[in-house]
Length: 216
Image (cartoon, rainbow, N blue to C red):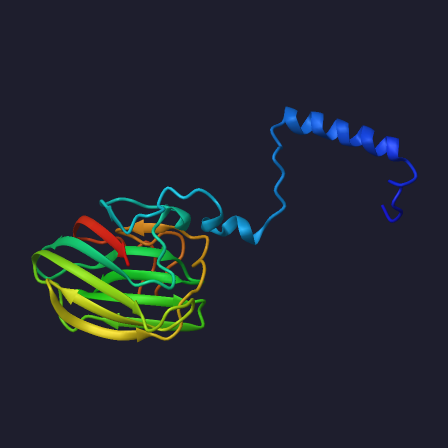
C-alpha cells in the first residue's frame, strides 16, 4: 500500500476498475458520493418543504428528522399550540427539536408555558410565562425574532397565552446550521432532553389539538 503501482501496471488497473463496476452495479453501490458536510445541507437536494412557510402537526408525532421540518435557523418563526388542560394546569413538552447538545423546546412546567433554547451546552435561554395555563382550552404561542439577519445572531422571544403577552426574553446565541441528529417531536421530547428543567420524555399530560410552526 505504500508503493503506487498504478503507473507500472496500467492494464491491471483497468481490469480492477472494470471488476469493481460489475460488483458495484450488482450490489447497488452506485452512485458513489464522497461528500460529507454537504450531505447534511438540505439546500443541495430536492426538498418537499420548499416554499412552505407553515406546517401543523397533530398529537403523537415523534421522530421526525430535522431535514423534514421547516427551517428554524436564522429566520423569524413561531410555534402555536392548541391545548386543553384540566383544573390545576398541565405539564409536559408541546414541541421540541434536538437534545442535550443543542435544540429548542416549548413546554409547560409547573403550569407555566416555557421556551428553552440550548446552544451547544454553552449558552442557554429560558423564557417562562408569568401566568399559568387556565383550565380548559388555550392557545399558547411563542415568537422568535432574530435581532438582525445572518446565522447565529441573538433573537428576541415573546410568549403569549390566549393572545396576551405573558413573557419575553432573549436568546444570546442561536444555532446557525443544525441542532443535532435528534428528532423533532410533538407532545414529548425523545432521546435526550433539550432543557435542564425535565427528564425525557416529559410527555404532555393535557390534550394537544395541534401544534403549528410558521416561518417568515
